[in-house]
Image 1 (tube, rainbow over the protein chains, first blue to last red):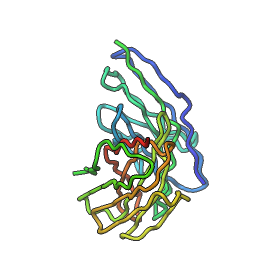
Image 2 (image 1 turned 120 degrees about the vertical axis):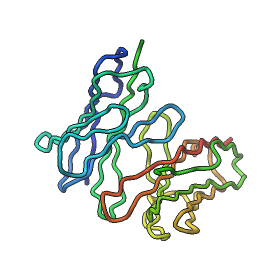
Image 3 (image 1 turned 90 degrees about the horizontal axis):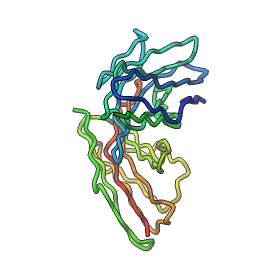
Length: 114
Length: 113
């Protein structure tokens, strides 16, 4: 079975500051990794995903994440945040291959202050 | 196009009512999912349909009844719900057999009185 740990439940930052949201996973098999964002009163939107290949993955809205197999991490970064980035961010992992189960972390609330 | 649509956006129902949630996707995905999300928590998987057949039921109470009439539609029939069933219900879809990237709809906010 796989598990996901998001190390910070809340991350407050000021506008235009850089941010890193941390995610660690554990799994006995190869997995696929995802970051989703959920704005207030909305569904989940896919930010980016790591399937294979380059360990640096670029997503929407200027976000990127780096897959580190040795540290079993998939941290999300943005060099300069905006007020509109205020949202809940979920890291998730799946084995794929008709497994269907997406294991989520508990989420990190990113609050961007002016 | 990676859009999953859900109706209604909001639903208020009494404990004796029967209602249905609807989900639709036109991405050609053959797996569709229902999730329940409580406030400040990650989504919890309820059901998975693969090729219109129920593949996973995560021990969901029988007052929730899923239905997949065709490859584009997914319904969730609700009957005799409890106040603790109030939550955001999310639908998602994915391809089958690869990384199964799930694309989510906007959700239905359900309040059970």
